[in-house]
Image 1 (tube, rainbow, N blue to C red):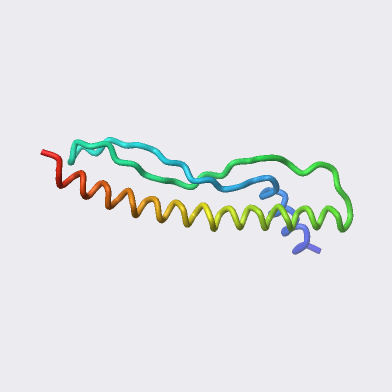
Image 2 (cartoon, one colour):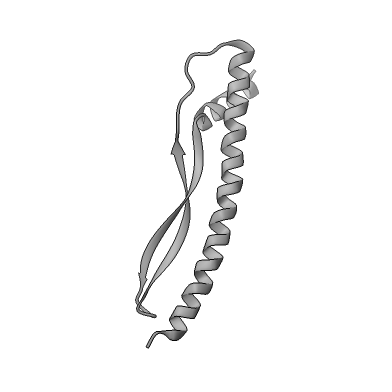
Length: 97
């Protein structure tokens, strides 16, 4: 009973949430260049309305699966983007006076 309530609470918190990559630009004092950096942010795209029984459980499972999938895909984009930005920064830093 407690486990079901805990899982339901976690799924409800994740309901309608996705993870998206965000790029920011920061100024690097050492190299005197602007460098890019990616972070992972959570965004809410909707909320679950009133539901009941198995239909509610299905919606919660689907919402949790979407949140998990978006975290994996967006997390991969952030890691790959930060690696690319790091190489770009190293090249631009070597070329700066």
